[in-house]
Amino acid sequence: MKLHHQFLLLHSQYGQHSEVQITLDELATTFECTHRNALNLITRMTEQGWIKWSSQRGRGRRSTLTFSIQPEEIAIESMMQTIQRKDIQQTLTEIRQYAQSSTLENRVQDWLFGYFGPHSEIQRNRQVDTLRLPIRQQIHTVDPLYMNLLAESFVSSHIFDGLVRQASHSQQIIPHLAHAWEVNEQRTVWTFFLRKEVMFHHGQMMTADDIVYTFQRLMETSQPMLYRFIAKQIQSVHALNNNTVQIILKQPSELFLPFLCTSRAAIVPNGLNRRGEELFGVKPSGTGPFRMVEMSKDNCVLEVFKPHFQGRAHLDQVEIIHIPWNVAPDQLEQPDRQSPFHMMHQHTSGSASEQGAWSQMHSPVTVRKFVTYNTRKEGLLRDPHIRAHISRCLQYAREAESLAITSTIFENSSDHIENYTENNSTTNNNTSSASHDSLDMNSRSNYSYPKKLHPELDQATIAQIAETPLRILTIPQYRKDAHWIADTLQQAGYQCNVVSTPVEQFKGSVRMESDLIVFSLTRDQDEQLRLFDLYRTLAGHVEHHTVIDIEHLLEQIQRQPDPLIRTQYFQQIEDRLLAEYQLHILYEKPFQTTYLPSVRGVTFNSQGWVDLRHIWFPPKL
Image (cartoon, rainbow, N blue to C red; front, side, top):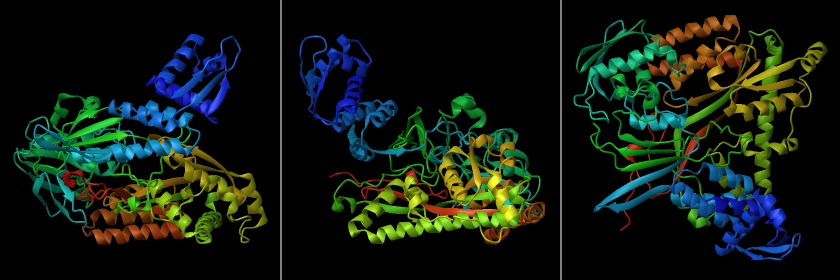
């Protein structure tokens, strides 16, 4: 393995020419070793047929080094070895470091296309179907209480089940671990009747005690988590018998049942199977269609759980490998709108006929990116005219970029149009043309941005804007959007500073010290819960008279059993914030999954993730 890396290092230094004149001193410096070790490395590379070496004796005399193989071949060979060992991160880092162009990464990625995807083999006279998935986010835990990333939720959703679930193509909530439920007239006492003989992965049968433990854990935790406001509305939970659980709420909430459909409310075994919270996150036991048999920082292996109460999944095994492809050391954040994994990425290096064989499917999920204004802080943004001007600047810049993209497409040949479409689907996996992410960040000067302030602002305000810096707050994943906002506003005369803070600190005091806050909203079938959580957060930094109206509408939402009417209330809140320039929507983009047609049964669950339970692929006959 080390020899592969040393060759890539050597080629990165001297590979501009197929033949170079070099001294042993220079080789020792390149390899950071002694003359003897440098000569040993050269000898081994010669024996492998990677190079030719014509030595000239005598200190200081230059020998001839000829490269006989392309670095892509060495990188692929190295990748094949490391991926079999399930330890590819160091290799990926070094490949990026030594690559002089995108060619090397493209060749390695081509090989990865063959490694990932569906694979079948015969073991003991039976076909074993394995699906290998590349995943862009590292999985730290799948414990429903502690997970923070989409990738973690995706894996967790196949290990654990909830009491109820949401139908894939509607807002209807249907039975799952509970086969039925009742609620009293005040809608504060919910009684759930559990399926019998549902088995956990560790072999024990699920009982009402497991349900009680799960919800008491949610009620008592101090851990920041999504939808915590719902868990805190639970007053008590009791086991009436082995198969009946009663949950009592402090007040009526029609969001309680949708909350039970989320991965946060997934059922865990009483006492976490005696593993402790930290260990349980990497060695979990649920009732889901797959059980975890292996987990490391870069690799997760799921195996079918045959006794699942809804029947056996078609796949036998799923291997999920963390590959943060195209992530430079200074760009660790990923575009959050991108799905945490793809069945397969779009393959763009093959022929047109090969590319035509790929299938694409849109997830029902979109991601909306927006910015809010902190009007509780003393400063510029107390003035609605300035907020309106900032929103117009951002909207104008977005429209100018979109127009520039359209103009570029129509000015080029049809081949370039096709290439643009391929690159857009490969990099961003979305279909919106309004994204500034699809543009070269250095090419913004080609587009027309607002160059002066709106004439309705007086000279005193213009002078104040030029002298008063605006603090833009975001999290690392959205830093690119925040810098785009800063660049746009600076060209309009504003002074801007971008501050990036970890997710766990985002709702703290640092938010109230900022002027503009960059948020995002995943619009899946949990959207109403997400919106409720979002508007409760926004109420902390919008004008007081607006807060009163928002809180009134949120109270009506909690008491409204009809999800369509709840949607109308949420729309009223959004319209109010937009009209008062306390909210500005930057863009919205859909998720998209690309996969080989040999993969069958590709469907999405209620969260918009591919449901592994239904995937299958026909055998090669």
